[in-house]
Amino acid sequence: SYELTQPLSVSVALGQTARITCEENNIGSKNVHWYQQKPGQAPVLVIYKDNNRPSGIPERFSASNSGNTATLTIHRAQDGDEADYYCQVWDRLTGVFGGGTKLTVL
Amino acid sequence: QITLKESGPTLVKPTQTLTLTCTFSGFSLSSSGVAVGWIRQPPGKALEWLALLYWDDNERYSPSLKSRLTITKGTSKSQVVLTLTNVDPVDTATYYCAHRSTTVAGAFDYWGQGTLVVVSS
Image 1: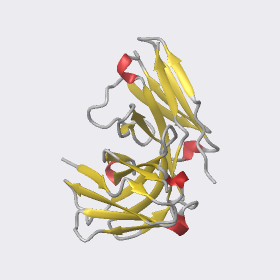
Image 2: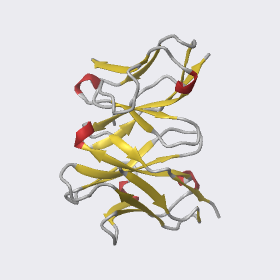
Image 3: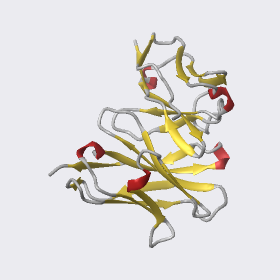
């Protein structure tokens, strides 16, 4: 089965750049979507199809996808970016989420 | 403006069948490329995709739960119903429904607020 591996946690200093990875064999051949989830809230789509931002998502959020790794990058991290982040793909018409990464802004 | 809202029981006994309804507005499930999905999240754990219903009535299910899940259109054109049979305490989770569109390459761009379902005797 297709499984997406994310680090459990990532820390970033206020104003610096955070990078969250999502790994699986040949993930570069798939469209990767990224969601942000704050405590007690529903997930919010922040990146779709590798590196596209829905309206209302700051330009500070970007992403890349190549080979076996997709990466979500958050520039100039803010306190409000502290959340859980999930990557997601479709594998043979089946939805797959990564295990999630808790981002802490120090 | 697209909105979705989940409804259903908050407490279910083991072995019973859980039925959840997603009531939505702002889009039509008859529009080409549109789908409604269900995703759940056990307390403190990761998101888990469950099922998807396409505009053309095609259905897709999580392989691990396929034998227990059914997704259908509701009695109203603006509803999607998920049933999960033979529930167990491990099915305790917040259940979300979400809008999926080809406009965003198949991502879930709108989510309901979620509904917490506890499975306990």
